[in-house]
Image (tube, rainbow, N blue to C red; front, side, top):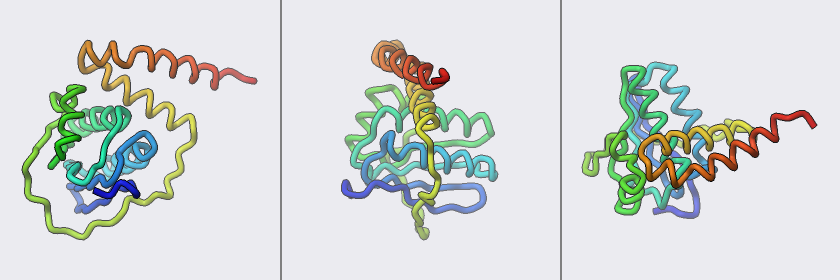
Amino acid sequence: MNIAKSRYRIARNTTMVYVRAEGLANMKTAPLLHSFLNSARSEGVKSVYIDLSDCAGMDSTFMGLLVGNAQSFTDAGGRLAVVKPNELCLRLLQQLGVDEVVTVVPDVEVPSAEYVDIDTHTAVDAKSRADLVRQAHVNLASLNDGNKAKFSAFLKALDADLSKKKKPS
């Protein structure tokens, strides 16, 4: 696992994308992946496989992003699945119940393909990042009562912070 550098590497064709998460998958890198997945979906990609075998850890924002994007792909007649999660990632997915709404395939053959880094030129402003973090946690809170209790104070504080930013100075 490469903890020093976090990145998303992709291999794709017209209908399928294979994403390899390397290093940490967190609120810092989540907007990049989210933007990429939105673009892929709008371009007609139907299947996305997120490989977590080299993921050094993930936070709730990343896991909430998986939940939201899995639903978006399903709504568009496609699928988002997590493949090859390492032991830590699988445990984290199970702790929050993400594995109950996102298909998780522990053992799968990795496709032989050329991987490239997701273009990192996608700049995300502070408000867009905060909105994404909020939506990711709303996604997680909607999964079960435990998550609702776990994230309600955080969401309340985030909503208060976001409302302050909307008010004119």
